[in-house]
Image (cartoon, rainbow, N blue to C red; front, side, top):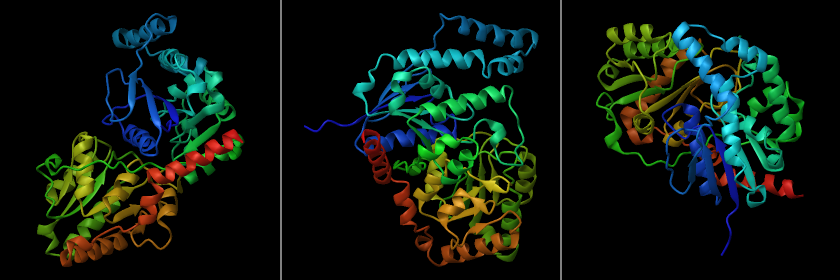
Length: 421
């Protein structure tokens, strides 16, 4: 009997409803399994989670440490007296007391396993938290098998302009990340442009980077998960995801409004959806939706099952990137949109990982001020939809392959061969 290669994963969350990042990490674990690996996931979700064919082990928070006590004192000072010492703690130590306690809690779980029993150990995080990576820095006997996954520029002051946030303790955070690049066997990025961007700050990445994009989920879609406000018989245009401050929906709304004015029949057949939590654009979208009944904007988070079902049943998906000169990010929803196999309306800067993957000949790729061109694209897709709904397809088998478990397996096998050579 063939023995499956084994991967130990240290991950902060397995709750797909807590962020788009977690959705992508769970899809990656599922692709590990599809690629023939046995996967054990040590997670810090603080509740039991079950994923088919993956051994999920909940790591409990250590409450017997001085770090735990300090983290609770910090929390209570703010709750009771509105005294916030967080900025001082971060400036002094780089991270919160809770961060260090969580990393130590995860480390205790990792020490129960032997590196010789595994082919790889992966650290996966979300947002600006890299607790799992700190865990591995504290576990040197695993370094020769460590795959450190990096989903965004780190620390935050390395985001491309016009992002300009500088976190407290940024120098210590820079040193922390540099140590990761020195100690890990591989630094894994979902995006080629993100790797190139980070390489300009951390030269050690050059000799140890892998590109593994977000994975196709392969999740079955049930029509029962579609909400009442979504009519799958219409020409639906969908943007799923929170509208961050620099992710301006106005070009889409203005182009859609122009499209409706120029196509009278679309007023009864078309709809535009924005799904996500409230943002600085919520009031703008609310006013527009009151004037234009074809526009729907959710006022809060929409459960992942519903969002994914709508993505797979819509006529057009939208990827809206931040207003910037470069977007090195690969959005978590990129794989979901490719999986839907319907056209993707892409709005972003010229230098963009999404645009790099689609190629220069892709017809539905635009910049932020291309309102007339976007409206014309709506016309073109709507006319095709009216003629034959089934013909409106993305039809990009190359992207399907790039995001597949098969491609992932090829990358991993090559990396382990290099590791043993």
